[in-house]
Image 1 (cartoon, rainbow, N blue to C red):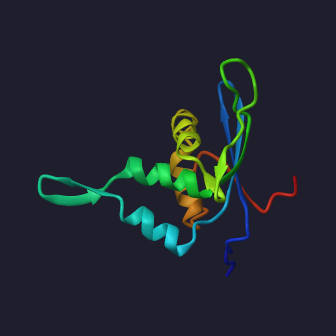
Image 2 (cartoon, helix red, strand yellow):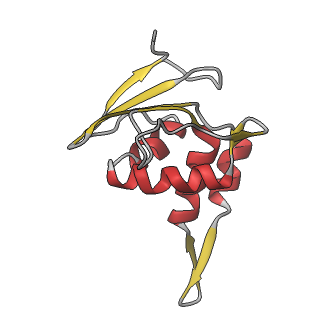
Length: 128
């Protein structure tokens, strides 16, 4: 059995109409998983997961590199970090981009150490 450590990196590659997007993520720590799980909302008296808030935190905690994204002025999209995680603004920008590229579920799954995802190429500890 193979085990992912927090030092491992996972690259997800998604092909879109506009080109290829490569996202490198790190697995979530147990403390980060607890923070994600605590994001809930009340719906008709029931506490349910707040998936949009969980997705935003998964991006914030796990994304370490993005290739293939550009701003509207054609400059490369650069990640902004604060204390080793993405800033809220940067994570919010990526949330929109990843929804369009069908990367939200793969990022959430892989960050939680589940590498069985469809629709994207998954590579652990890429060489380049």
